[in-house]
Image 1 (cartoon, helix red, strand yellow):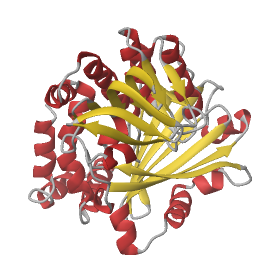
Image 2 (tube, helix red, strand yellow):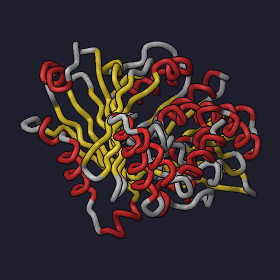
Image 3 (spheres, one colour):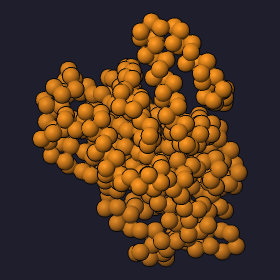
Length: 397
């Protein structure tokens, strides 16, 4: 049986960050990836903070365009309120190239990456994992890191965490269209091939969060909606996506261009800090513990942060409570924990519609110079919405 210091399941951002940390500390590291290559199974588009990624992995990150403009739209029924702002340091990147680069950095640090290998179960002895069974044989290690994503089959089989339910999961659907650079620039008013824009949308009834990313020669569009709401309303995800494309006007923009990719994924909305982060000498990170920022839709930054901490925990043989404490201390992860309560309230009932209607009414009144309208909206929502927002702001301090 092959033996390593640390075996990592999953070669996404979390797994590669863990591998980089452990290999840099001189440990013998093996990364097992189910797909044919890192990034091949990923559904999400990627808008990332380049400086943060390179602070962990070094310079050379592949990216598509610098994000010059973020457009944010709140849809009250089918009428949007749009806000635009200009961020610094954000770029769009394709997940296949991005994940392969992350993995290559970990390999250069000394980690071994084996694709096309499915992890099946951990083999335990008195609460300590001794080996991992895969479809290509067993491998032994002193510690294991499960960065296997939302389909956390190994951790669930080991009883570390339970499967995601419709109540704490979102159905994500993404489409990628091939569009010539010149056409893409013309459609979205981009000055050159290096400048990009992204668009985030929130709709209610049913609750839908959407995104649009501009790449060099393609456009990624996707949505996410709570699974429980879709089941209760008997709405198919593809129908929801079609309605979303029509409402936002994206359907008209992509008319005549070829569809390059159509994919779907379950996205966790519950998770850390309620979920367990490990057991014995096994540590979980990234999507395996539900680390997705519900406000910014960012899963990559917390994945890298938690993966780095998991690598450190495995190297130093931390117990589960020390590892969880370090996760809670990290600014990129602690804010997700603080956002959980508001996220749960936002997904419950028609709370999303109430928030969106309040913000839309206030902005419309402001644009019309109607101060009384702003006051009336605030007074009307004083008891049912504003206290929740104030509580959220205080928790985020």
